[in-house]
Every structure is written in structure tokens, then in C-alpha cells.
Length: 318
Image 1 (cartoon, rainbow, N blue to C red):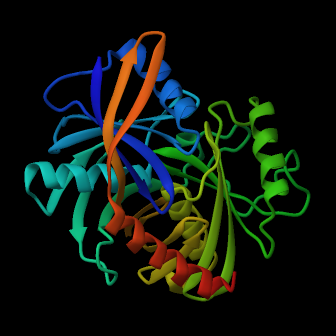
Image 2: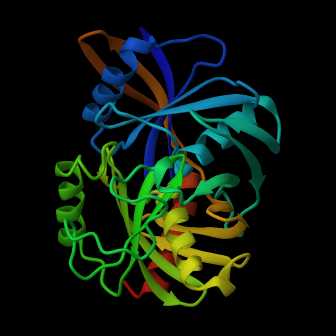
């Protein structure tokens, strides 16, 4: 079978996008193994986006991680899926479905030429621990110590359809995060469905840096829902920052996030960042084999993304 693909990324979070709106190409029972094979063939890929028929929105995104697990939601993937679907349906504003929720997409213009920008409106962000879940807590986990991970750090749990554990720290070290990410896997009695882990470092009041150890993936250059969860925790600790735009840097670039308080334990956010194409081509797929044939590259978008990285590096003085 020959399958058309677009390789894309949101702030360095790389996906292979497969259009199944008009026809299912990869059967349900094969999607997990197919995604593993794609990511094994391209070690830079974090997952596969399948774009299918919408339930209520114009289309629906499903995302499978590099280990074959299906995630409920992915903010960076949703921007890429939103850009693609907007081009296909010739729309700039529309609703879009994921596994559990419906979101609203706005195709935006960037200050950097050839850097496609997409804004996602995210609702139903919750701190209700039952929606995550974490065992042993009745209501919420807010600035709590979890001694199985650390004796010093304070953690907050957030659901953005998928589960997140976030903390604010002055130091974001790769080895510390990896150690805690692996401990999460071992403590299924506490995290029965696993959980994404994000550390946030404050640059100044309106600018922060976030790094995520992602469930089912490990380290990625960025995690959209991880950044949203981290910024929500930042606002909960600094309530005057609700409704204010926060610039969030990560290893893959920068996004803009505004968090709003809707009611007790329920929040919403707008989330804007790049949705860039890298290349397009064909995947030659059989049940026991897969190869990827690149046919074209999006060099103008690649150059624009490098400009974004230069801005980020200058800000962080890398």
C-alpha cells in the first residue's frame, strides 16, 4: 500500500500526518503498529496524526505516539492538523474534534514570513484529580509534595483531556526530569494511566520556559498540553496573570498562551504557535515492512522556523 504523508511540526514536536477523511487507509487494529514502524523508520518523529471524519467539527484528529499508545490530545499536533484541515476545507475558523473533546481553530498570521501560525481555543481544562487520575487524593493536587518523585518540589495535577503533572522550579535538568518520568512509570498504584511531567522556569513575569517528559514518548522539543498545564499552574500561583498572554519558550521554539478561569476547578486557554510543514512524500506499507520516500521539502518554512529559534536562543542567551 502506498500512503501520502505530510511531515510537520509544532515547535519541534514532529509528526507524520495521514489524511483519512475520505477513506480509512490504516485499519484500526493496525494503527498502533503502523505508528511504531513510522517512528522507528524516522527517529525524529514523535508520533502519527490520523485526520478522519469529524463528529461535530470539520474533521477529527487521532494521535498515536512513537510507542504505539494513543493520546487523548496533543496541542502541537492539533495545530498541525488544524492548519492542514483549514487548507483542505478552505476555512480560517472552524471547530475540530479530538478523541474526547471539540476545539476551535483560528488560522493566524505570524510576524515571521512563511511561519504558519495557528491558534487553538482549549476548553474543559480541569484540576479535578478524578479526571487525571492520581490515586490517594480526593479533590485536587495543588502544590503538593509527591515523595515518590521528589522531597523538595511541589506538584500540581491538570487535565487537558490528557493528564499532566507540573511544577515550578529554578532548575530544569534533563537527568532529574528523566529520573522522575521513569519513576512515574513504576508507580502505577499512584498514576494508573501514567502522566506527563512538565517543569516551568520563570524568565520574567510574562515569559517562562517549559520542558516536558511526555508519557509514551519521553523528551520532545515541546509538548503543547504540557505548556498549557504548566502555565495554568503558574497562574494559579499568581492569580493576577489570568487573562494575560504568557510567552512560553521551549526547546523547540515559542508559543503564546492565555489562561482563563471559568469556574472552580475548570479553566480554558488560547494557545498560539507555529504549524510548519517539513516535507511530503509516500509511505510504502505492508503488514511486516514500511519505508518512507521523501518527494518534496518546504524549505521556506524551514528557514522561517530557524528564525524563530534564533529569537528563542537570543532570549535565553543560548
